[in-house]
Image (tube, rainbow, N blue to C red; front, side):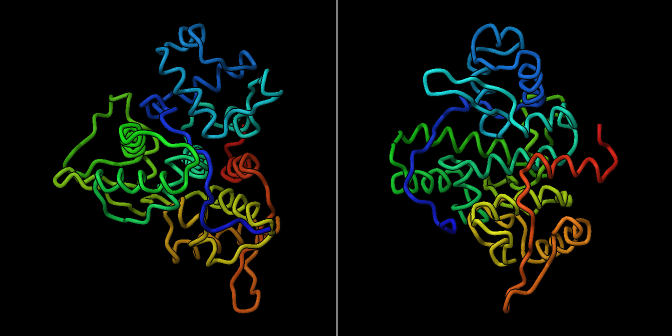
Length: 303
């Protein structure tokens, strides 16, 4: 059964970030803790070990979960937390998240997280230029229509604030402090810009080329949603959770990415074919961790 283009009603999560963005070094600390202890508990012991406050450690646990670094085992009464396959891959190849591919994969997992402000913003909020008030009002309306649980406007405002401060790059006349450890590395993807003179925000295309394996990871996840081994290029552009939506790619950029992917990974089954009048990308439905590992094999940085 193909995934619906529009999201059905479901339970939403609110405020679990505790108002903190993903800070520089946080995910590395979390991965190290998981690797050392085979678990992660958002308690005072873990907070002291990582040098974080009690709310910060709750935030970090959420970010590890929301970005797909954690895997849960056991039943509802006893859940064991361990590194997911993706968490293991990042810990093995880029433990300090120094390569762009790591942050693109983090973003993909976050933007695909159902029932979240991140998923709404990159899929359902279509405005290219907007102000904070309009964004808050739009998410508030969407939650009232689509969420089976409700929250207050102040919580909605905090969720939007966290999203915008995570992604929005200040305009050129507002230089960020390079020593500011609170800046979220997701800004480096250049998907949103804040114009300091007007206070408005603008969606932007990525300044640097998206790694082909990040594009393939997003495409393979979409193919899994659709229960298909091929995806029409039109679906890559417009469908919910598509690379076009969550990676900020336009039609020409998608066409270039698909061509590059077929050239590099044709022997793996990535090919552009014609199905009727539709150009379609065939792709093996490998999980993100395997595309992540292939990136490091390709660039010669495998550990």
